[in-house]
Length: 114
Length: 114
Image (cartoon, rainbow over all chains, first blue to last red; front, side, top):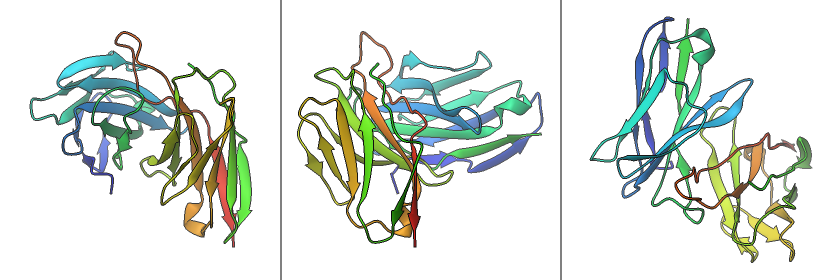
């Protein structure tokens, strides 16, 4: 158990809908990362937050957005869903940012768009 | 970012040491080498990381060559549960607000044979 908690574990929704994935980082971790893993793309970095502020963006679509709240939990919002958005979405956290700080991953949220 | 090269797959007999190589010839002097593994569709699991010196923990040992251009992850007594995709990642420095997370390649699919 990494200490990173993600909900829901599984989610099935229809095209055009909107969903919210939630992440609770490890206790004391200030930095949160979101990753997407689909069969054909591997693990792709989406976005990073640090202490409530957006720090970096990766391959995140404009239909997707995220935020980190004062209690440090984070949410990833996916809207106008398409079949191709079906994937595993991972949240990860680290104490600080920077290469010496180990990043720990949650178990992911399976999103299926039908 | 420094890139890594790993063999796509490897086999190892159960109970033997599994030695997973990684080339990172363009690594910079202050970039870390991280190893993660992912057991089918679970969240990536942190294994070990190092900068210059060899490192050992309860899971594995990391051997980094003196010129830092390559490294080897050693699982001393492989079990069937070690079957997974192993990722060698060079962690970039955070350059003025850029992403300082992890960039995953394709990794090595390690199969432990009974």
